Length: 246
Image (cartoon, rainbow, N blue to C red; front, side, top):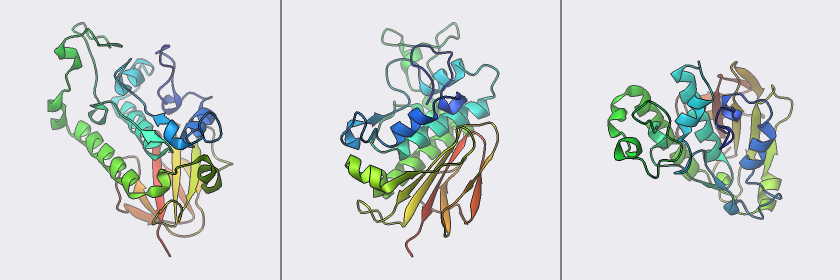
């Protein structure tokens, strides 16, 4: 998602790398039929206690990119692993754009021997509206995942039978249709779109009316709007739609 863990100036899928869509697709499917026999064997995350925080890693590889776009990359990362099959995991503070900066202003990659000034979670950042918005976005993603059992399939056979990758999209754009009625799912289906590009993308939807529950700025279990036919997904963002039971 964010780029190579050791070569920190390399971009990742969310920051515009052109050759990682297939890798992300495999991760989204919980590596079903690959090295995992069940999605529960795949732990999905974008940052952990080792190496850089998510925002720091994105910032290192995107010089000259605006803070707004870096936050979009951060949020796109979160949507991907929060809707992927497998077990989602996040580093404490990622949901409020945690960063680890030393006294000289540099990014601290491994902070096991760094002082509290580097390692502490800066709770006061939540006073900033941009940080609070990210915090609420993560809360919404967690609530959405908990509300939809189809995001938590228990074996590779169910993944392969009930998730379809969409073809014919713009370069690097990924989309998946997840069937309803599987694993106790209460909706008639979920449609997920990831757009890491710097331009909006148009995606044709399956038949019917679809509730948008996640877009570039908001995430949760309630419909933001209802659409049909096709949808435009903003640059560097995701969209998650739900088809209500008929």
